Length: 432
Image (cartoon, rainbow, N blue to C red; front, side, top):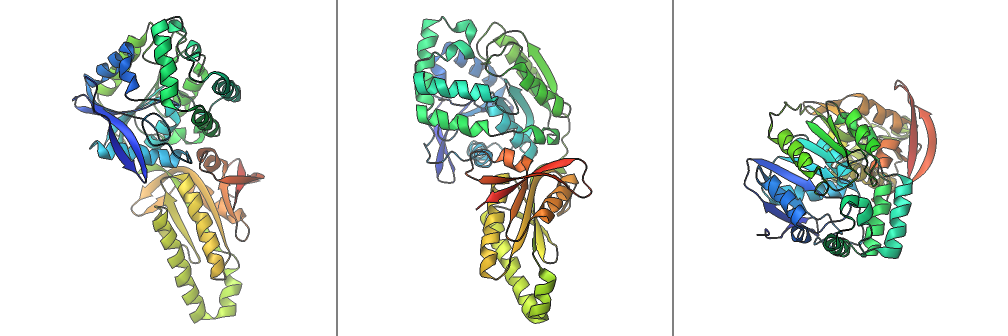
């Protein structure tokens, strides 16, 4: 019997989810581009796939915002908000910790979640995944959406082995229509086309299994190989076949077997003192001259207002103050878009105080040392901030690649050398 569809609240948005199975493991399935959790159960092979997971786990499936039975939204936003949605679903289902199973377009979100919240992710499975979407695939999909969305013809690419099955063709046609409108499907693809999680893969510390079919036409096997190569300790399983979906194809049972074996086996310890975070540095431009002009007392008053403004915005954007740095601050965020918006808000508000600040952000692996943070990501953030002019917010290319769909816009500042940091770095200025 199909489980009851419930709704988790993520901000003002309702996220549709279902819970089924009573196994000892918590498992969250992150779907591909579009989904409809109720329509899944109408296809026998998909229902069988879900019940197989339910035999050993307590499973949560959900429709991402803007798709399926979840709220339609004016803005899709980016991975920050989608991580919030995933956490909201886990909280609603009473899951403090779970394994995360990212399918296709769900893999970048799952990878970022595992890196950012290792305490909530006991393991990571990535099927048919990739670090970024190829441009030719984007163009082909947008052309299909414009001309034939809802006809089901896309099934020939997603499941070639079942392309001539009339019943499945009808089910898939409805799946497209129930998953998203044509405009929503196109907007989702355009947003996802801008995302690249390649830089954050080395920061993932949870046990990871990558599965890919070698003939996959939608997501070539090179994407799965890149994931496995750059996630420390990841295991890669390559199987024959050209179906993109895990529940169709001759070796669908092998995929299910591999996932069950991985999730029910022993778990390696996870280090929680190293996490993915977005680092923000700010400082006041011309602080020495301003302090001399104001005098000690007025300068102290100005600094108090400066710190109060920053702390108010950190609370607003869910940032964590690590420490003050004289006339600046070091803070961390669990989402790069939130960190970038916070920096912009701080820069705007400082002008009313007669202050110009510079700010820089980078997303990378940080080592947690009590209340402090350290590591190369912190050094990079500081060096990026040092390049900024008065009133500017600069970010590394890693931040830019992770905030697709957030509405943030950037100006290319070219390749820069960062003092004390190896290599060259692509820097961007936030447009405000």
